Length: 168
Ligand SMILES: [Mg+2]
Image (cartoon, rainbow, N blue to C red; front, side, top):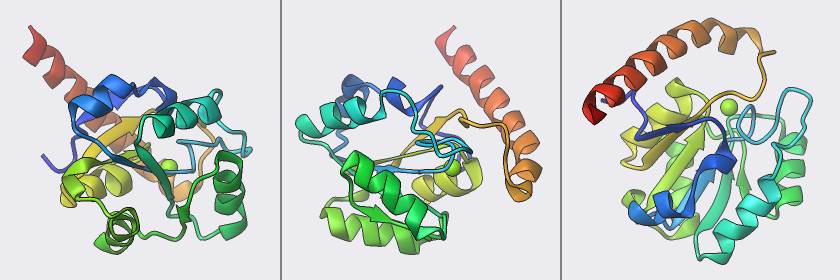
């Protein structure tokens, strides 16, 4: 289903090379707010090392953020040495298409990592990319996100339940 992620974990650095290789991923699109940085703009611990390891294994990474604050997105991109697209209007196809062109990859060889179902996950699924949901880093959120969170939590719970049933 379009609202369910292909994979769910706590944070971005939990994503393993094995998972990416098993799913033929050659490029990753990373969300910024609550995925790479928290509300106070602190990078998630180990982000740089994680990205370097991914890149050393021939998997490309790029930032795809809905934020319209270019200075913020650019600061993260510079720190992690990544190309970036800001104001990406996820889940619309525009930003995903641009990222695909810049990476020169097919959607099926790309993964999207983000903390929001209605932007990151729905966008990834609609573009036939491998969708990875992470828990949001910060609880302090802007009000629009806050309004969506209870619904997202419900979806995540039902997804986890389903996965458990599958494993039984
Ligand atoms: Mg986010």
